[in-house]
Length: 270
Image 1 (cartoon, rainbow, N blue to C red):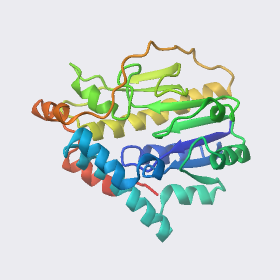
Image 2: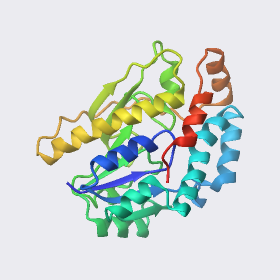
Image 3: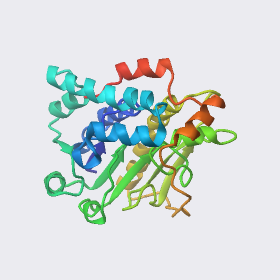
Image 4: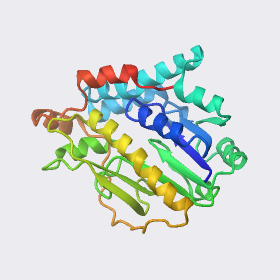
């Protein structure tokens, strides 16, 4: 089984991605990392403005701690030769690719050179076209930290907090040219302590997702894939608005805590 892994540097998933790559390094033939601040996504300034307009200031500590800071620290670690995932790839001869346009010619060329059997999206922020997915004979799988079809979208652990009781879990599903819409192969509910922040929940769920992905990939390799369920799509859950964040805060639902910010400093990005 030859796997092309697509991810991005984030405190929410870096440890889970690194652990997965360490365990399955013989299978991984490409590590492709998204540039979340690519010009086509608005760049750093454009994204901050968009988040501010939509969600207000409450979203910024979550984004800066879980994405901005880890991205900067990852770049610094790479420059110093101390980047865990980059060094793992170099030690084992795994090609790396920076993704600014997932479905553009550079990524197509990288996939054709790697010749993967399977694409694995593990906390990745760009949408695969059918043509890109067709470059892997077994298509693509995605780790999503919610119990799909509930909480489709970019911040599922926030929306899971709002359920009564909170409904945390992780899903492994087929990639499709629509956000979080492919057939479900496996799911795992996860009970977390009351008051768990959205950041901490995401770290726990990505760790569980790494194990779930490994199990399903082993089944695919053995020719005994799990049954697939095509979900009835529920409404998409976007980034929350400022009023929604204020309401969540009044309910004691936190996006990020001081321990989450400290965890971001030590997340093995790069």
